[in-house]
Amino acid sequence: MKRVTTLFFLVIMLPCLAIAQYNPLTKPEQIDFKPKSEKTAKALTLAVPAAGILTGSLLMKAEAYDVGFLLISGGILIGPSAGNMYAENTESVIKGISTRAGGLGLIALGTYLEFFNSIFEPHSSRDSHNISFWPKALMISGAGLVIYSWGHDFYKSVENVREYNGENDRPSFTIAPTYFPKEKAPGVSISLSF
Image (tube, rainbow, N blue to C red; front, side, top):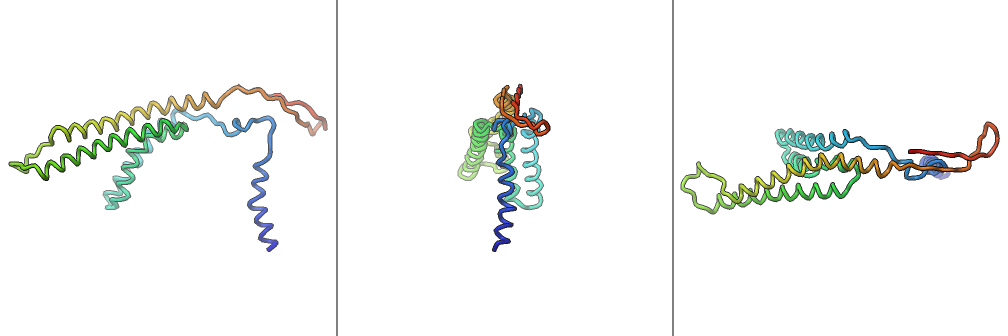
């Protein structure tokens, strides 16, 4: 039992003790700050949806329809918000996903109405079926809303990265006591960052 307890304290508690060390020259909010790149935000906004749609399409061709459909849907619905997630702006993420969900809902509603019309409306010729006005208008406006939201997220992610970097990269001035072991003397440390 002593070995298990000792092993537990060495494996679990030792890293906690190492993390808990305090450095008086840094403020806690400055320790974790690293500026974010605008290029990375743009790349994520384009690459994540493309990867989801491409992978989903390949899985659909391999007859894994459920997973393929989920990846394509996730690529269209959530993927364009990846740049805003990177910029840590949840408000833009929620707005983007909601807008695209509304657009996909309009597309689904237009498809449903057209399907309903094709079943219950008598046609003289089944071969020459044209989509009626309202379902077509719903589908086109839904697709336009999805495309608009995608473009908006592309440009908004850059703005959000600039805002994130501006909020977290503040100038700071710190004065703290310190000890110089070489001279065996206490002193004062002054730090200025901007």
